[in-house]
Image 1 (cartoon, one colour):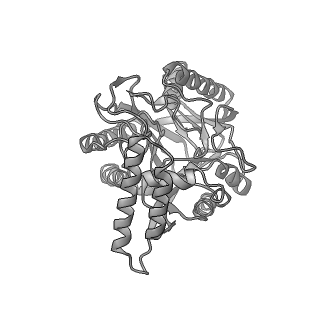
Image 2 (tube, one colour):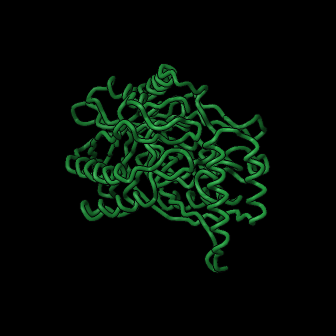
Image 3 (tube, one colour):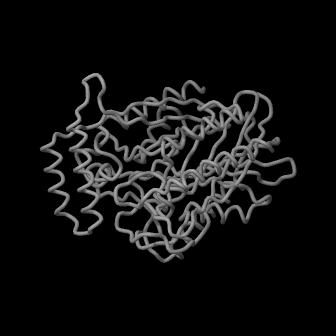
Amino acid sequence: MGELRAGVAQLPITPPVGVDLTGFVAREQPSIGVHDELFVRALYLENEEDRLLWLHCDLLALGREQVARTRQAVGESLGLEPRQVLLTATHTHSGPATVPLRQCGMVDPVYLRMLDGWLLTASRCAVADHRPVTLRFAEERCTLAQDRRPPSLLAHTDHRLPVLSLVNDKGNYVAVIANYPMHNVALSAENRLISADMAGAAAEWARQRLPGAPVVLMTNGACGNLNPPSLSADPHVMESYGRQLGEVILRGVHDGESALTPLLGTNLQTVALPLTILSQEAVLAEYNRLAKMVILDRWQAAMREWRDDTLALLEQGTPPDEPWTAPIDIQVLRIGPVRFAALGAEVFSRMADELRAIHGPHTYVVGYANGDTGYLPFREAYPEGGYEVETAYKFYANFMVAPGSYELCRDTAVELLLKLG
């Protein structure tokens, strides 16, 4: 399998002040300042087995079209296959609008074109300077995240926080990969400053305290139902949570044990998720129900847009052999003793535990990967309802993914992980 080599890059992707922020329908627009910079962090790994380029962005999400453009550009420039290129987002709710969400900020096409260039530049820089590294791993525990749904026997949190660190022959840290499932919403809808939220604060806090000032990828996990303890426009609250995450990352770096076999492998499959198609009557009834719930003008406008767009789509009809579906990438990684299942959705947290039960320990979920289809609840959560099941999809799309979609993604991830060995 040979030695493991790594290259890194970190480039600012902060938009100009005045762009719309995303993630909250209740937020006043546009942005009015910058609290902290946004970055794309690139990590390139290779050995005799495989190659991997991981691009991690301080953004809510990346659109599937942008992911496809980046994979094509990286493939042409660096010879990497789509399965060897992973694009993920921290899911900060204080970044620019990069995917269309009804009444949650206007997407700026000029910024997306700039982002294309930054992603390719970061990729080239990371690949250009890769050197031998030693891989270390530890699994730590963090109890910040809380199940935000109403109390239920189905409530779940995932307190695991894995830390992979890459060290060069001088003892300096080149890169750190951490993973923790929690919505990056600490700054709340009242905030109008550009920020990477807790993930950015944690990454910077750890970077400043490690020899070599490594690139720290603070990735998000299966956090569809998980929030921080509180939301506040006071940045000190967000920074406190970021510092707590950073302290756990440092502990993981110091506790890390060297991986004797620096395995590397990737696999990728796109799955079409079935949708729950509503009738025209059901769309109108659902709109009338939701329109009475919230007085906020932008909420009302978003629901009207959903109603009108969905009715227009139903008017067009669809051939029986071409049902409406939602595509999602399921990409799996093997990095030393760790396995990641990366999904382009807001995955409910118990998926990580289910994957571990089937595939073994040190298996984790990376959410908001290669796009964002929306919420992915497990089958039993649908009868409970709630925002994630009944409402959120109306900002993202026209129809909710059907019950069983979560299980289809989980089972596909298991198959792909087993192929990695």
